[in-house]
Image (cartoon, rainbow, N blue to C red; front, side, top):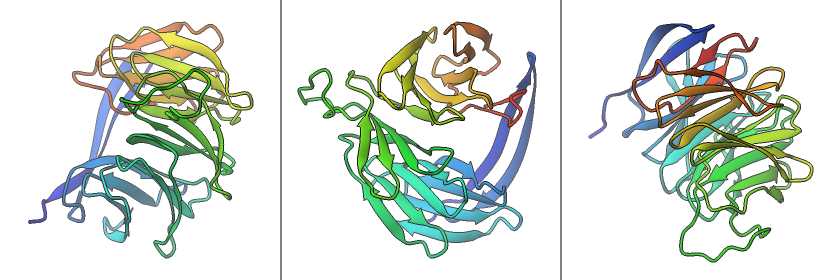
Length: 271
């Protein structure tokens, strides 16, 4: 039996310590299990959702109607996003794959298959040339420092589908990844920490410590000078990229912070 599920656009806006909650509900009947992730299209007219039912669905915001279903994953879809021009959708899944879809016809264009465990986060670079994906750490395998076998953070070339670089050898689950505005750096959220990486060299630049539990979501602000992180410890932390210090901790949340992001001007935080 199909469950009556809804996509809820719910935000906690935080500005200088003042916060207000805004909620808009779009009832959707297309998914038959939990929705794990949603993302807006670049023009703000569509939403894409990824679900435990192994499918991805595209929705029209104005009408609330389902436009298309993308099927191909064999397990839970954990992360979805649009490319910068809104013509393609990227998805990550517990089936260990990252998949690229063409919106116009729903066709799967490419499958990226180097991860060893569940893919938890995917994103495009701002110029659309690269894909970044983060995954769980696969236990029961012997890893060596400097080896690409662990593959918990992978940078891909969109056109060729080839791996450009693997950033991570350490034994941690990567829950979230994000590019800096200039695509020169990436950040990852994992076990209690946020890590900053150089894209060209693949080297780790800085570790941001302060959370007391898993970091579920990370994002840069508009100029790349600040980072926001949300955690299982029920806090949101604002970081200075250069110093690595916490600028402010927001503790208004009453449960796990699964997703955080900046407004385009960097003055507000959405969680």
